[in-house]
Length: 517
Image 1 (spheres, rainbow, N blue to C red):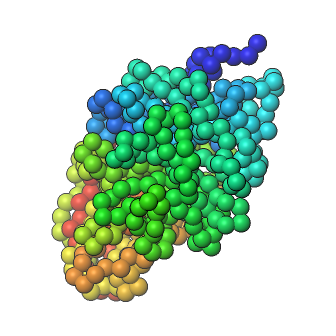
Image 2 (image 1 turned 120 degrees about the horizontal axis):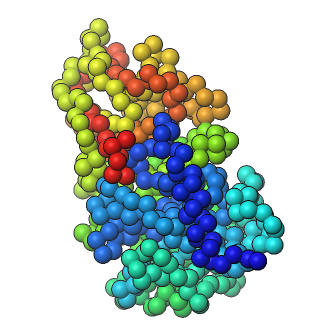
Image 3 (image 1 turned 180 degrees about the vertical axis):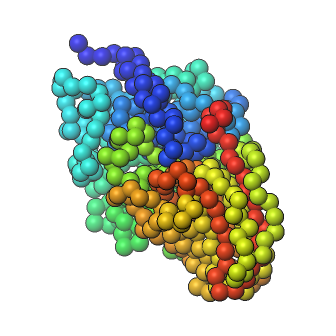
């Protein structure tokens, strides 16, 4: 006898609860980055503020810590700081329009009622609903799944679910799929990840990520008055495949005032353009730019909060082999919320959401430091694995400045962030960050050009295996490290070939889950 949808949800929630009891003490597991209670998380979905709560949904395989046909996990917060896990929002309905996954999308409030719009995938031909196998087995997709997914364009549709109880439970709409097919006359690669906003005419507008075969990645623009009947308008923008690939996922479209910002994830590093939006078309004012300069950031999603501020989260992937994270019982997390805006010159400004200051617990260090050859290390007595490190360099005649963290007493294990003032390059060095085999330890590097008399302004968020770097409110770099030594918790700061003065403050960071661990 086939399971009812209620039974599917109950089984999925129980699978998470069973694994959650086993993963809490893992020293690699982040504590102040948003993630599922156990097993797999990827794309952030449908961030929304409603009735006093911030809600975050996310792609979630509740059965194992590995990729698979997705449901939507859910967490909520009254303040963007303290979070609680909620029941799984939706799961695939076997044999239906979303039987192989409820994929990424948005949540909006329409006529006072929360509406979720997501991409349903009917069939990826990887398991049969008649197979007598447990969900934990049929949820696992082989690593080569993606080629098959791209071939199943006729199985990708757009679907609606609604909630009437504060988003704790959701009902799939009887009109699903509300967009059952791709636009006529287009030969597409991919058709997914709806991003919604409302314009002055009172109607909803939506982008879908796609690609036109032989032409390049494209964001398709739709319009609706009721979220049920959708009108395809035109491509909002189509990229050059040499610059932005052949297919886009997870489009975001942000009205930043003087300019609009289009963000896409082209099966690689997410990129963005700034430009003008008029007559239902977007015209970039320049070439595409990297959104984050690390190696694990993907599929960002954004919301405009009640104060008009844009907040963005991204998926922080693992940088270790799948057998390691599958065995750990958890995989991946989300970035901290980032405030997205324009600076006075019209360039992109990115900084941690102001609420993140509330996560600061004990102040471990707060002083002006002088760095020079043969100078004693001012951070010699500071240790930690869940920290915020703020460093403002007020004077420098050195070639470079380095901040080492998670280093062992013998420095055989360490990670270092270095800024080269001459080359104007910021580099995260990880070649000694772990003893674990097959973990990615390649350097992450980006250009950071400081204007005349501009101080170097670095903030490092260290959360066990997660590293998030913010530089001068315009560069972010997200990466992973997996220290294996229990004594690899020390910090150090030093100048190279010259001296520097800096204001350094280091805080111990609290858990977002209301515990003291």
